Amino acid sequence: QVQLVESGGGLVQAGGSLRLSCAASGISVGINRMGWYRQAPGKTRELVAGITSGGTTNYGDLVKGRFTISRDNAKNTVYLQMTSLKPEDTAIYYCTVLSRYSWYPDRWGQGIQVTVSS
Image (cartoon, rainbow, N blue to C red; front, side):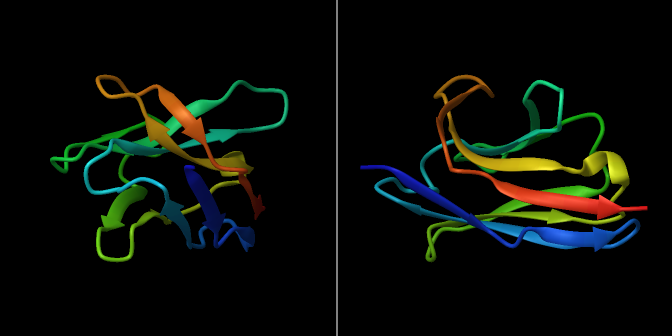
C-alpha cells in the first residue's frame, strides 16, 4: 500500500521560505517519478515540480527559479524547498507519484496547506 505523508506546511510571510517534506512508504522514491502539485482556491491543480528517477527536474512556470525539488533515497523522502514565497503561492500542496512516462500524477498524498501572507 502506497502512502505519501506531507509535512512542513504552514503560514509564512511574503518573501519567506518553507521546506515541504513527503515521506513515502510502499514505493521507492529513487526509482519512481515523484512530484508536487498544488491547488489554490477556485483553481485547478497544477504541477509545481517533478523529478525523474534519473534526476531530471521539471518546474511550473510560476515557480521556476524559486522552488527546488529534491529527494533523499535513504530516507525515502521527497522535498520541496520554496523560497521568495508570494501570496499567490498560497495553496494546498500535494505530494504525488507521477506516471511512468509523463508529469501527470498516479497517486496523491493527503495534501498540506501553505499560506503566504502579504
